[in-house]
Amino acid sequence: MTLGEIAKILNAEILYGHDLLNREFSSVFCCDLLSDVLAFTGENALLLTGLTNLQVIYTANMINAAGVIFVRGKKLPKEVVQLAEELELPIFTTPLLMYETCGILYSRGIPGSI
Amino acid sequence: MNKENLHRMEFEVEAMNYQAAGKASSKIKKVLQQIGVHSAVIRKISIVSYELEMNLVIHGHGGKLIVEITPSEVTVRAIDEGPGIPDINKAMEEGFSTADEKIRELGFGAGMGLPNIKKNSDNLNIISTVGKGTSVKVVIKV
Image 1: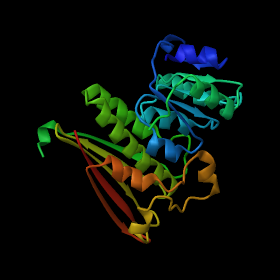
Image 2: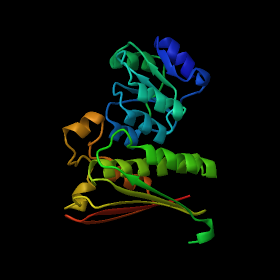
Image 3: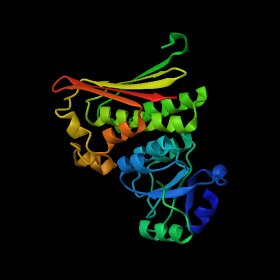
């Protein structure tokens, strides 16, 4: 599945990555604990989180994440969006809750990342 | 080690500066990509250097992050003059952390750092003296 398709399904706003919507991702990892994201997430995963600090972007970059979806309609600090641009990491925000977002992705058959 | 093929980078990492934490590691990742290192290896090195960088920021009172790249391996070293680790075996246990509430709010301090560094390295060596500092050396085969 591509980032563009998932953005549509989740009614997500594209904060950065209009040119990268064709990027495919293999699985999903949802977590607000970055230590665990670094320890457990597999390659090319889509990361779901409610954390909105710079470390989310750095962490996603280190694990070669396909992109990040911020849940619960989170507003992001400007420097977080700027860093995502700099590192060419697509980021989105959805008004849906973490639970709803996971439920939708799971019901579409997208596997969890490991 | 073949010195002719050695590429070395050194970064000063500031204590408690969460705006800059991650900068050194993302720079390292970029250089590895430019050199053409395999993406799965870059991922391992990036995770290790970022964990080490965060440790310097959170625990080490800042310090140096040094990377040396040869055609056969990459060595990442974190050197600090922080409080030191009283019990390294304990620090290697999953779930053990001395991080405070502020760090946990950022999403760190789960006690996964050193175990995760070990998981991603081919060789890990930690030397620490309480009150003097810690030196961590990681080797990852390319």
